[in-house]
Image (spheres, rainbow, N blue to C red):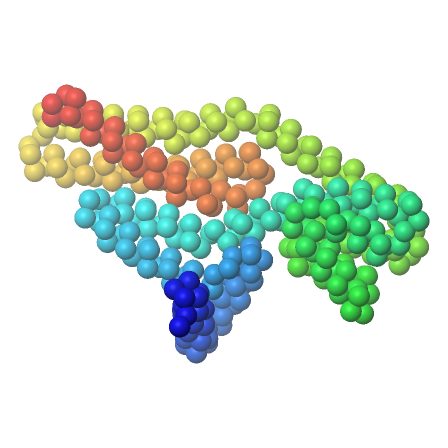
Length: 320
Protein backbone atom coordinates (compact mmCIF):
# COMPACT_ATOMS: atom_id res chain seq x y z
CA UNK A 1 0.00 0.00 0.00
CA UNK A 2 1.38 3.43 -0.99
CA UNK A 3 2.26 5.92 1.67
CA UNK A 4 0.24 9.18 1.82
CA UNK A 5 3.19 11.23 0.58
CA UNK A 6 3.82 8.84 -2.33
CA UNK A 7 0.12 8.80 -3.20
CA UNK A 8 -0.04 12.58 -3.23
CA UNK A 9 3.02 12.88 -5.47
CA UNK A 10 1.68 10.33 -7.95
CA UNK A 11 -1.71 12.03 -7.88
CA UNK A 12 -0.11 15.38 -8.68
CA UNK A 13 1.74 13.88 -11.63
CA UNK A 14 -1.42 12.24 -12.96
CA UNK A 15 -3.38 15.49 -12.65
CA UNK A 16 -0.65 17.40 -14.47
CA UNK A 17 -0.51 14.84 -17.27
CA UNK A 18 -4.31 14.84 -17.58
CA UNK A 19 -4.37 18.65 -17.87
CA UNK A 20 -1.60 18.57 -20.47
CA UNK A 21 -3.39 15.97 -22.62
CA UNK A 22 -6.66 17.88 -22.37
CA UNK A 23 -4.97 21.14 -23.37
CA UNK A 24 -3.17 19.54 -26.31
CA UNK A 25 -6.38 17.96 -27.64
CA UNK A 26 -8.54 21.08 -27.41
CA UNK A 27 -7.18 24.54 -26.69
CA UNK A 28 -3.70 24.08 -28.14
CA UNK A 29 -5.13 23.53 -31.61
CA UNK A 30 -5.49 27.31 -31.83
CA UNK A 31 -2.12 28.59 -33.09
CA UNK A 32 -1.78 31.77 -30.94
CA UNK A 33 -2.64 29.82 -27.80
CA UNK A 34 -0.23 27.06 -28.85
CA UNK A 35 2.59 29.60 -29.22
CA UNK A 36 1.79 31.09 -25.82
CA UNK A 37 1.72 27.60 -24.31
CA UNK A 38 5.14 26.73 -25.68
CA UNK A 39 6.65 30.04 -24.55
CA UNK A 40 5.09 29.81 -21.10
CA UNK A 41 6.18 26.17 -20.68
CA UNK A 42 9.75 27.14 -21.63
CA UNK A 43 9.74 29.96 -19.06
CA UNK A 44 8.41 27.66 -16.33
CA UNK A 45 11.08 25.07 -17.12
CA UNK A 46 13.83 27.72 -17.26
CA UNK A 47 12.70 29.16 -13.90
CA UNK A 48 13.03 25.62 -12.44
CA UNK A 49 9.45 25.52 -11.18
CA UNK A 50 8.55 21.90 -10.48
CA UNK A 51 4.86 22.37 -11.32
CA UNK A 52 3.10 21.56 -14.56
CA UNK A 53 2.31 24.79 -16.50
CA UNK A 54 -1.29 23.64 -16.97
CA UNK A 55 -1.68 23.32 -13.19
CA UNK A 56 -0.29 26.85 -12.72
CA UNK A 57 -2.65 28.35 -15.30
CA UNK A 58 -5.77 26.57 -14.09
CA UNK A 59 -4.96 27.22 -10.42
CA UNK A 60 -4.46 30.92 -11.17
CA UNK A 61 -7.75 31.15 -13.05
CA UNK A 62 -9.57 29.37 -10.22
CA UNK A 63 -7.98 31.68 -7.62
CA UNK A 64 -8.97 34.74 -9.69
CA UNK A 65 -12.62 33.68 -9.84
CA UNK A 66 -12.68 32.78 -6.13
CA UNK A 67 -11.12 36.10 -5.07
CA UNK A 68 -13.46 38.08 -7.31
CA UNK A 69 -16.59 36.32 -6.06
CA UNK A 70 -15.61 36.62 -2.40
CA UNK A 71 -14.45 40.23 -2.70
CA UNK A 72 -17.48 41.37 -4.69
CA UNK A 73 -19.57 40.89 -1.56
CA UNK A 74 -17.69 43.81 0.04
CA UNK A 75 -16.38 45.98 -2.83
CA UNK A 76 -16.75 45.20 -6.53
CA UNK A 77 -13.88 47.40 -7.68
CA UNK A 78 -11.50 46.12 -5.03
CA UNK A 79 -12.39 42.51 -5.85
CA UNK A 80 -11.62 43.18 -9.52
CA UNK A 81 -8.23 44.68 -8.61
CA UNK A 82 -7.46 41.75 -6.31
CA UNK A 83 -8.30 39.33 -9.13
CA UNK A 84 -5.85 41.18 -11.39
CA UNK A 85 -3.20 40.97 -8.66
CA UNK A 86 -3.74 37.20 -8.38
CA UNK A 87 -3.41 36.86 -12.16
CA UNK A 88 -0.28 38.98 -12.13
CA UNK A 89 1.29 36.83 -9.41
CA UNK A 90 0.22 33.51 -10.89
CA UNK A 91 1.17 34.18 -14.49
CA UNK A 92 4.04 36.58 -13.80
CA UNK A 93 5.94 34.66 -11.12
CA UNK A 94 7.75 32.37 -13.64
CA UNK A 95 8.89 35.45 -15.59
CA UNK A 96 10.06 37.11 -12.37
CA UNK A 97 12.07 34.03 -11.36
CA UNK A 98 13.47 33.74 -14.87
CA UNK A 99 14.67 37.36 -14.73
CA UNK A 100 16.33 36.70 -11.38
CA UNK A 101 18.09 33.67 -12.82
CA UNK A 102 19.33 35.69 -15.80
CA UNK A 103 20.59 38.39 -13.42
CA UNK A 104 22.41 35.68 -11.43
CA UNK A 105 24.03 34.47 -14.67
CA UNK A 106 25.26 37.92 -15.61
CA UNK A 107 26.32 38.88 -12.09
CA UNK A 108 28.69 35.90 -11.72
CA UNK A 109 29.84 35.89 -15.33
CA UNK A 110 32.91 38.14 -14.72
CA UNK A 111 34.13 35.81 -11.96
CA UNK A 112 33.74 32.79 -14.23
CA UNK A 113 35.63 34.49 -17.07
CA UNK A 114 38.40 35.52 -14.68
CA UNK A 115 38.62 31.97 -13.33
CA UNK A 116 38.84 30.50 -16.82
CA UNK A 117 41.48 33.04 -17.81
CA UNK A 118 43.55 32.30 -14.70
CA UNK A 119 43.48 28.56 -15.45
CA UNK A 120 44.52 29.17 -19.05
CA UNK A 121 47.50 31.22 -17.85
CA UNK A 122 48.81 28.15 -16.03
CA UNK A 123 48.93 26.24 -19.31
CA UNK A 124 45.60 24.39 -19.12
CA UNK A 125 43.24 23.87 -22.03
CA UNK A 126 39.83 25.47 -22.30
CA UNK A 127 38.18 22.18 -21.27
CA UNK A 128 40.34 21.98 -18.15
CA UNK A 129 39.51 25.61 -17.38
CA UNK A 130 35.79 24.86 -17.65
CA UNK A 131 36.16 21.82 -15.40
CA UNK A 132 37.99 23.84 -12.76
CA UNK A 133 35.41 26.65 -12.91
CA UNK A 134 32.54 24.17 -12.58
CA UNK A 135 33.92 23.04 -9.21
CA UNK A 136 33.18 26.47 -7.72
CA UNK A 137 29.66 27.53 -6.80
CA UNK A 138 28.84 30.33 -9.22
CA UNK A 139 25.09 29.88 -8.89
CA UNK A 140 23.07 28.73 -11.93
CA UNK A 141 26.01 29.31 -14.25
CA UNK A 142 27.84 26.39 -12.59
CA UNK A 143 25.12 23.97 -13.71
CA UNK A 144 25.50 25.30 -17.23
CA UNK A 145 29.26 24.69 -17.15
CA UNK A 146 28.72 21.10 -16.00
CA UNK A 147 26.24 20.59 -18.81
CA UNK A 148 28.81 21.95 -21.28
CA UNK A 149 31.47 19.54 -20.00
CA UNK A 150 29.09 16.58 -20.27
CA UNK A 151 28.21 17.50 -23.85
CA UNK A 152 31.89 17.93 -24.76
CA UNK A 153 32.67 14.51 -23.31
CA UNK A 154 29.84 13.06 -25.40
CA UNK A 155 31.43 14.36 -28.59
CA UNK A 156 30.11 17.89 -29.05
CA UNK A 157 32.67 20.58 -29.90
CA UNK A 158 33.45 23.36 -27.44
CA UNK A 159 32.03 25.95 -29.81
CA UNK A 160 28.69 24.17 -30.19
CA UNK A 161 28.40 23.42 -26.47
CA UNK A 162 29.19 27.01 -25.48
CA UNK A 163 26.78 28.39 -28.10
CA UNK A 164 23.96 26.15 -26.89
CA UNK A 165 24.68 27.10 -23.27
CA UNK A 166 24.50 30.80 -24.12
CA UNK A 167 21.21 30.35 -25.97
CA UNK A 168 19.66 28.30 -23.15
CA UNK A 169 20.72 30.93 -20.59
CA UNK A 170 18.41 33.55 -22.21
CA UNK A 171 21.03 36.16 -21.32
CA UNK A 172 21.86 38.68 -24.02
CA UNK A 173 25.17 39.46 -22.35
CA UNK A 174 26.21 35.80 -22.19
CA UNK A 175 25.32 35.34 -25.87
CA UNK A 176 27.59 38.23 -26.83
CA UNK A 177 30.38 36.80 -24.67
CA UNK A 178 29.94 33.40 -26.33
CA UNK A 179 30.22 34.90 -29.82
CA UNK A 180 33.44 36.75 -28.89
CA UNK A 181 35.06 33.76 -27.14
CA UNK A 182 34.19 31.35 -29.97
CA UNK A 183 35.53 33.77 -32.57
CA UNK A 184 38.73 34.33 -30.57
CA UNK A 185 39.30 30.60 -30.12
CA UNK A 186 38.69 29.80 -33.80
CA UNK A 187 40.99 32.57 -35.02
CA UNK A 188 43.72 31.69 -32.52
CA UNK A 189 43.67 35.23 -31.15
CA UNK A 190 44.62 36.48 -27.71
CA UNK A 191 41.96 34.56 -25.78
CA UNK A 192 43.47 35.44 -22.40
CA UNK A 193 43.38 39.18 -23.12
CA UNK A 194 39.85 38.83 -24.47
CA UNK A 195 38.60 37.08 -21.32
CA UNK A 196 40.22 39.67 -19.06
CA UNK A 197 38.84 42.61 -21.04
CA UNK A 198 35.32 41.17 -21.08
CA UNK A 199 35.39 40.49 -17.34
CA UNK A 200 36.41 44.09 -16.61
CA UNK A 201 33.80 45.49 -19.02
CA UNK A 202 31.00 43.48 -17.41
CA UNK A 203 32.10 44.58 -13.93
CA UNK A 204 32.09 48.20 -15.15
CA UNK A 205 28.52 47.78 -16.42
CA UNK A 206 27.38 46.51 -13.02
CA UNK A 207 29.20 49.33 -11.25
CA UNK A 208 27.34 51.84 -13.40
CA UNK A 209 24.06 50.06 -12.65
CA UNK A 210 24.66 50.20 -8.88
CA UNK A 211 25.68 53.87 -9.11
CA UNK A 212 22.49 54.71 -10.98
CA UNK A 213 20.39 52.89 -8.37
CA UNK A 214 22.09 54.70 -5.51
CA UNK A 215 21.95 58.13 -7.17
CA UNK A 216 18.28 57.78 -8.15
CA UNK A 217 17.10 56.39 -4.79
CA UNK A 218 15.70 59.71 -3.53
CA UNK A 219 13.94 60.46 -6.81
CA UNK A 220 12.50 56.94 -6.83
CA UNK A 221 11.16 57.25 -3.28
CA UNK A 222 9.74 60.73 -3.97
CA UNK A 223 7.87 59.56 -7.07
CA UNK A 224 6.43 56.53 -5.26
CA UNK A 225 5.46 58.53 -2.16
CA UNK A 226 3.82 61.31 -4.17
CA UNK A 227 1.93 59.05 -6.54
CA UNK A 228 0.98 56.05 -4.40
CA UNK A 229 0.63 57.58 -0.91
CA UNK A 230 0.02 61.34 -1.07
CA UNK A 231 -2.26 61.47 -4.14
CA UNK A 232 -4.96 59.09 -2.79
CA UNK A 233 -4.95 60.93 0.56
CA UNK A 234 -5.55 64.27 -1.18
CA UNK A 235 -8.25 62.86 -3.47
CA UNK A 236 -9.92 61.12 -0.53
CA UNK A 237 -10.19 64.41 1.37
CA UNK A 238 -11.38 66.28 -1.73
CA UNK A 239 -14.06 63.68 -2.37
CA UNK A 240 -15.28 63.97 1.23
CA UNK A 241 -15.40 67.76 1.08
CA UNK A 242 -17.31 67.67 -2.20
CA UNK A 243 -19.80 65.21 -0.76
CA UNK A 244 -20.40 67.48 2.26
CA UNK A 245 -20.86 70.59 0.09
CA UNK A 246 -23.23 68.78 -2.26
CA UNK A 247 -25.35 67.53 0.59
CA UNK A 248 -25.73 71.11 1.77
CA UNK A 249 -26.55 72.69 -1.60
CA UNK A 250 -28.20 69.93 -3.70
CA UNK A 251 -31.21 67.68 -3.16
CA UNK A 252 -30.68 64.09 -1.97
CA UNK A 253 -31.20 62.19 -5.24
CA UNK A 254 -28.97 64.49 -7.27
CA UNK A 255 -26.30 64.42 -4.55
CA UNK A 256 -25.96 60.65 -4.71
CA UNK A 257 -25.53 60.73 -8.49
CA UNK A 258 -22.98 63.55 -8.47
CA UNK A 259 -20.95 62.01 -5.65
CA UNK A 260 -20.90 58.67 -7.48
CA UNK A 261 -19.68 60.38 -10.67
CA UNK A 262 -16.87 62.21 -8.88
CA UNK A 263 -15.97 59.05 -6.97
CA UNK A 264 -15.71 57.07 -10.22
CA UNK A 265 -13.58 59.77 -11.88
CA UNK A 266 -11.24 59.99 -8.90
CA UNK A 267 -10.78 56.22 -8.76
CA UNK A 268 -10.16 55.98 -12.51
CA UNK A 269 -7.63 58.80 -12.37
CA UNK A 270 -5.79 57.25 -9.42
CA UNK A 271 -5.58 53.86 -11.14
CA UNK A 272 -4.14 55.37 -14.33
CA UNK A 273 -1.87 57.71 -12.38
CA UNK A 274 -0.48 54.91 -10.18
CA UNK A 275 0.22 52.74 -13.22
CA UNK A 276 2.17 55.53 -14.92
CA UNK A 277 3.97 56.41 -11.69
CA UNK A 278 5.22 52.86 -11.17
CA UNK A 279 6.25 52.54 -14.82
CA UNK A 280 8.23 55.80 -14.72
CA UNK A 281 9.82 55.12 -11.32
CA UNK A 282 10.99 51.64 -12.35
CA UNK A 283 12.36 53.08 -15.58
CA UNK A 284 14.37 55.55 -13.52
CA UNK A 285 15.44 52.90 -11.01
CA UNK A 286 16.10 49.83 -13.18
CA UNK A 287 16.17 51.19 -16.72
CA UNK A 288 13.49 48.68 -17.77
CA UNK A 289 9.70 48.96 -17.96
CA UNK A 290 9.16 45.20 -17.92
CA UNK A 291 10.24 44.90 -14.27
CA UNK A 292 7.35 47.14 -13.19
CA UNK A 293 4.63 44.72 -14.37
CA UNK A 294 4.74 42.66 -11.19
CA UNK A 295 4.41 45.71 -8.93
CA UNK A 296 1.65 47.63 -10.70
CA UNK A 297 -1.31 45.68 -9.16
CA UNK A 298 0.15 46.10 -5.65
CA UNK A 299 0.51 49.84 -6.16
CA UNK A 300 -3.02 50.19 -7.54
CA UNK A 301 -4.54 48.25 -4.63
CA UNK A 302 -2.56 50.32 -2.10
CA UNK A 303 -3.74 53.55 -3.75
CA UNK A 304 -7.36 52.38 -3.88
CA UNK A 305 -7.42 51.24 -0.24
CA UNK A 306 -5.84 54.50 0.96
CA UNK A 307 -8.33 56.57 -1.03
CA UNK A 308 -11.38 54.68 0.29
CA UNK A 309 -10.06 54.61 3.86
CA UNK A 310 -9.24 58.33 3.94
CA UNK A 311 -12.57 59.40 2.46
CA UNK A 312 -14.49 57.15 4.85
CA UNK A 313 -12.52 58.21 7.95
CA UNK A 314 -12.75 61.91 7.05
CA UNK A 315 -16.54 61.73 6.77
CA UNK A 316 -16.83 59.76 10.00
CA UNK A 317 -14.66 62.29 11.83
CA UNK A 318 -17.01 65.08 10.72
CA UNK A 319 -20.04 63.01 11.70
CA UNK A 320 -21.47 62.89 8.16
